[in-house]
Image (cartoon, rainbow over all chains, first blue to last red; front, side, top):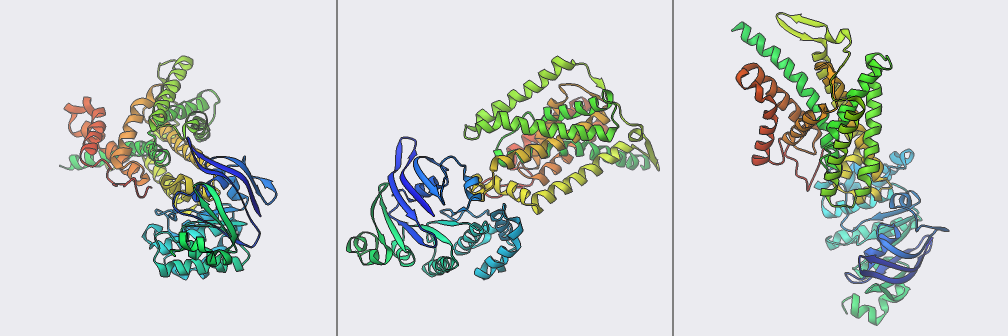
Length: 231
Length: 300
């Protein structure tokens, strides 16, 4: 689905990502884990061409390097950004409408599907998105990203700032989306929840991949346990 | 006493008509500010170009009034979008002050280009006869134009609000005012939405310019300066970033001017100053304007 080779990301003079390779196969959940500042968000931004970068990104057989963010989204990428970034001055329903900007014909059908997936946002569909709780905003951000029927859904720190119970709910939904055939690239600081639902995982540290493997095995790995799972 | 209330109604009609024109132009300032945080100082001159296009449409091409207005609207929209494309778009990531200086540059450029090619002498604007038709209702005298102007304004306002709140493009404009990067994440080309804002604002300015030319039947290259500044004051008084606020601000300034001239004739020489007195008062006491928009939160 997506193959990344020798990716470097720069912010001015700072090199945030220092030559990483990874791939996501169709139908899988792949997670990028690592502590704050490891380069996880930069990697996602690089995939969407919103930062300065070098390297190769191949998405379903075509090179994405020269495309702008909005064209890449039209081609099947979709990102749930860090901090949700719902449009707080638009209603819940209008947020979904924005997600389906280039997908008019399927808007009604997808909207109903999202309300089925997250009944809680249906109840509040005419409220301003800014009035929702953090968990509800995360659900809305995920639904909004799905409205374009992406081939690859990328989630940036979906657990950030959410109560543990809500984190569980959100991750159950992510697992459900995989069952429906959506390919997912998950970026998380919360290594435990990420490893539990993903098929394969990469560990980022200071802009480099320091470890990778099947997620199930990683949970059992001693080094991972010590560093990222709190013993 | 009867004369007084007649006089009052008469002046209210005049104020409503004048306020409508300021409102039409102020909407363009406020919408561009919403998406770019730019006070587009060339906006008044876009209005001037609109009025000129209307003039040329009738005087040179011999078009009827409505067709000339259509030409002005289309021409001004294209000009507004063109200025965005060639002047503002390359500066998307530049400091806001660069954008502001560019806007002033475009303003000077348009004024002086028209001055060079068409001269500074006011040209008479052919107002269609039906617009000048005078109606007398129980002693209140007004022209058809002063009735048409507010009606068209309110109609256009309804259309703008419908676009902003009910269409996906309008939602994108409102979303953009809040978060450009996330708009791009929706697969929307934010630059095209910004261009649309310039197109819409310029179209309204052109209609405002035509109405202006109908009321003061002449056009000249510098006509956009003072009107533009007053419409800008209207946008700030109403709460810049808010379309409803721009309309309220436009009416306030229109009414103030009319009231000053009608009821305080000894101050009528200062009528142009009142818009700016209001502007200063608002900036001193309620910088967010009447509709009090908080720029960290919502817009429109």
